[in-house]
Amino acid sequence: MKIAIIGKGNVGSALEAGLSRNGHEVRTVGREPGAVRDAGEFAEIVILAVPFGEIDNTVNELGDSVSGKVVVDATNALTPDYELALGFSTSGAEELQKKLPQSKVVKAFNTAFASAMNGGRINDEQLAGLVAADDADAKALVLTLVKQLGFDPVDAGALAAARLLEPFALLNIKLGFFQGYGPNSGFRLIH
Image (cartoon, rainbow, N blue to C red):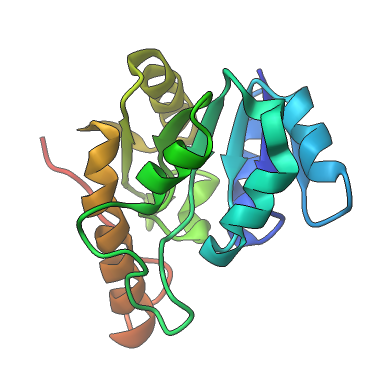
């Protein structure tokens, strides 16, 4: 499958490695002029692994290149001082869906640290790969990618569940970086 990752940081690079290892044709781009739109045109699935503050710029650069395509929101809707940017009455993923009404937005890859993105595990423990979306086919496709990466794929429900996944990601960040557990920590779902 052709996958574009917008963002060459820790998350984008780790996802690129894991998805490439699983046989996908992956193109990862940063802020090069025209590269974002070209990547959107190339891909069947586009993963946004950019800082939350760059979403509007990224959406503008993508334009209609993602019309009808699956767009995975791996961002964390946080302020620069690590607080929730939107609260609980909406989510970054829901706002992204409003900005890309012709795309199928899926929330995924935001509740684990980049150190787990390549294999879905921390200290040989399989982490939960939580996925939320309104489009059933798009969600199923991303759940398959999550499983291929090594996560335990968990259907978290409709896209509105991103209102819970984004604060959950913030909890993970606060535990990892402010409470001293570090980036080699994460969550599993016992089921």
